[in-house]
Image 1 (cartoon, rainbow, N blue to C red):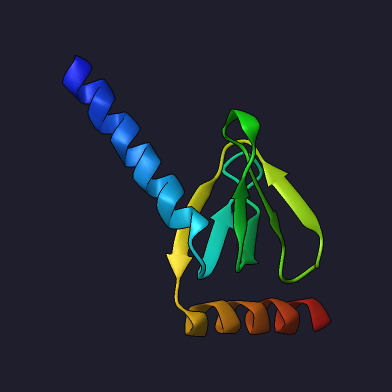
Image 2 (image 1 turned 60 degrees about the horizontal axis):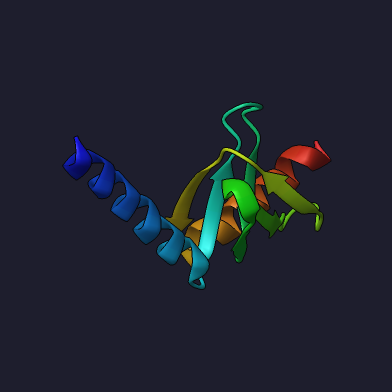
Length: 88
């Protein structure tokens, strides 16, 4: 049981380490289904993450989130697709 807890904590620590590094990210809020794109994520107290949404240029804080590191190409394509769908 302790081994499983330690493994889980290590995985969370590594994820936080990866998220703290530079790059491009797709962040999903599982409660609302909203998807955001950003190039920087900050960890807040209590496990929440804070970032600036690239599309709306607003600050967003999410308690529970799914973060996926993506390539610069994916990031640019996603932002262009969002702009195209909103202009229709």
